[in-house]
Image: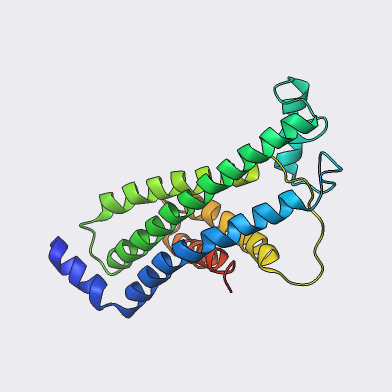
Length: 211
């Protein structure tokens, strides 16, 4: 199957068209939503240098007794926390940009993967290459989020919110992505199921900031 035939199948496939539309539409609005959250958390309070609630990866590095404090690379004071918040913003901006690259990789993997499961193995090597690149992109983006400096405050919000939904979905797609890589060569059915779960929850995690 040549590239022109593959392109034609992509164009006439309604599912592919919908996914491509969602990809470009979310890239426009989700950036403003994420930056608004960052701005709000920076303006709420400056009385405490560290939030009471931090994820364990942030506490390991940036907590009061974290690695960055022990090696004195980032002493805990007002001036340094201001620098950390700037670092946090840059890391989350990079996290967001890499997120859209990863989403594109998921889409490409889905299109090629369907061909493989239908018996067309001509793009098997390309599928493996895109899979490795998507995994690298995904876990790089995840690391930027998990190990970024904490915000000034991190209050527990009552009720349901887009931020909570994003975190819950992150747990799902992170676990699914790990399983996708584990079963890539050992169990095709579980590999396919975990890959679809990772893609669906990942796309939903991006969309949830708007809806």
